[in-house]
Amino acid sequence: MRQTLLRIRLDAFWSTEPIEGITSIGVGYLLLAWTLFGLGWLLWRRLSPQRSEPQAATAVETATITSSIVFWSVVAGFLLAVPRWAAASFPNGIPVYGYGFMLLVGFCVGGWLGAQRAKQAGFNGELVWDAAMWIFFGGILGARLFYLMQYHERVFANKQGFDLLKAAVNLPDGGLVFYGGLILAAVAYLVFCKTRKLDPLHFADVLVPSVFIGLAFGRIGCLLNGCCYGDRCELPWAITFPANSVPFNAMLSRGFLAPDAVATFPMHPSQIYSSINALVLVVLTSCYFRYRHHDGSVLALGWFLYPISRFTIEFLRGDELGQLNTSLTISQWVSIGMLAAWVPFYAYLTLHNRKSISLGVANDSASVSPA
Image 1 (cartoon, helix red, strand yellow):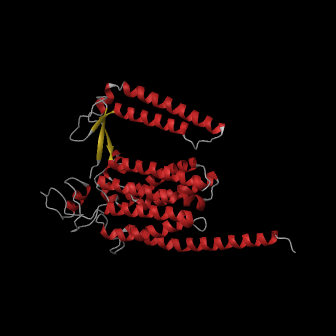
Image 2 (tube, helix red, strand yellow):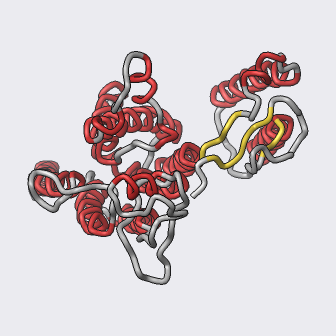
Image 3 (cartoon, one colour):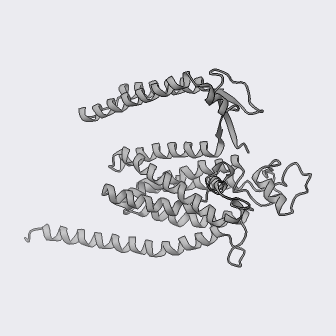
C-alpha cells in the first residue's frame, strides 16, 4: 500500500529531493508535463486525418483552447511566484494521495472510452463527459454518505464541533462504499437524462462499461489506501499491511494482533480480486454492446453480473462484519436487493421489446398497399 504517491514541492521549483522518504517533485515539472501534453493534444487535433468538423465546431474548439491557455497561463504565473506564505503553509509539499489519483485516472479512462463508444452509437461524445461529471460527483457523495451511515460510530467517535465535519470529509483515511455511490449516481444520471432529453436506457448501454472501468481503477486505489482489505489467507499471493495502516489498526483493535506486531497476518488481496472482476465485466459489457438486442440490454447484463460477483468476493473480505443477525455483510444484503430489483427490470425490458416489435410489424403491414 502507499497512501501518498508523491508530494508536490512549493519551496523548490525543479527539486526532486524526497520528503520524509516520499518521492517529491517540484511544481515546475508538472507545468512542463502539462504544457507538453497540451501541445501534443493540439497538434493531434489539427493533423488528425479523420478531422472533418464544421466551422461552428472549429470555432468552439478554438475558443475552448484559448480559454484553457489563458487559465493555465494565470496558474503558471501564480506558481512561478509562489508567495512565501504558501510554501510555509505546506512545508512538506502538497500530498498526492494514491486513492484519489486512481479515482481520477479511472474517471479519465472511462470517460474517454465512453466517448468513443458514444460516437459509435450516434451520440455526441461530449455528452459522455457531461454525464460523467454528474455521475462522478453524485457517486462520490453517495459513497461517502453510505460509508458514514455504516461506520458512523467509528468515524465520529470522540469527535465534537468542527472535528465532526472534518471527520465526515476525511477521504484520505478511506471511506467510500461503491453501492452507496451507485445508488446516488443512478439518481444523478436520471436527472441528467431528463434535463438533456435523452433515452436513459439507450445512453446507459454506452456508459455501463465505463462505470466498471472506473471501479477497476478505484479498487487499485483501495489497495494503495489499505481499505476494503481481505480476510486471513494462506495462499502464495497473500499480502500483508504495515503498522499504522487501516487493516493493521482494525486487526489490532479486534485483538487479532499483538501490540508489538510490525505488520498484519497474510490477507486476501481482495482489492485486486475486485479490480480483476471489474475488468472482466468491462470486457463482457463492451463485447455485448455490439450484439445487444434492445436498449437497456447492456445495463441489464451489468446489473445482473455485478451483484453476483460482489456477493461472492465479500466472503473473502475482512473489513465488514455480518448484519441483521446474520453472517452476511451489508454489501451482500444490497447485492440480494439488486438482484431482486433486476427481475422486474428485466421483465419490463422484455415486455417493452416485444411491444416495440409488435408495433413495428403492425406499422409495416399498414404501409403495404393491398394487391
